[in-house]
Image (cartoon, rainbow, N blue to C red; front, side, top):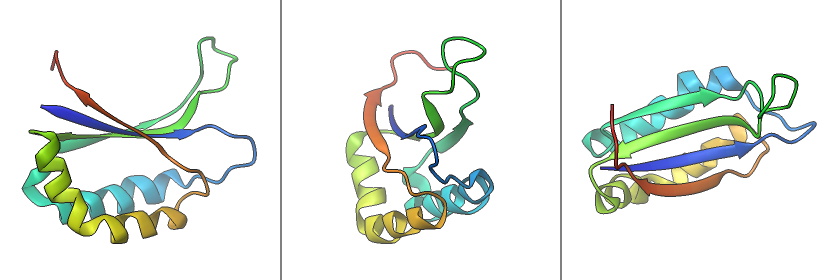
Length: 105
């Protein structure tokens, strides 16, 4: 199993609509990717290394797929629509990482 992490760096003055991201964008991704997206999670950054330190990322999502090929097959045909929706919830550029899940829940 692989995990595609999409991370939005916390930058002063940046705009991020958590409700839109949670209620509209990620369900859109799930719907368009269909069964190729096994499930996803959404995180909202609270703090950094200490209680008073700002979160490194304002938000993250993790998309779980069986393989990189499944992710590409599910995301690729819809990439233009998914990427165009980013402007509806943020002005931040996401950082993306694909990882192999070596320990699960």
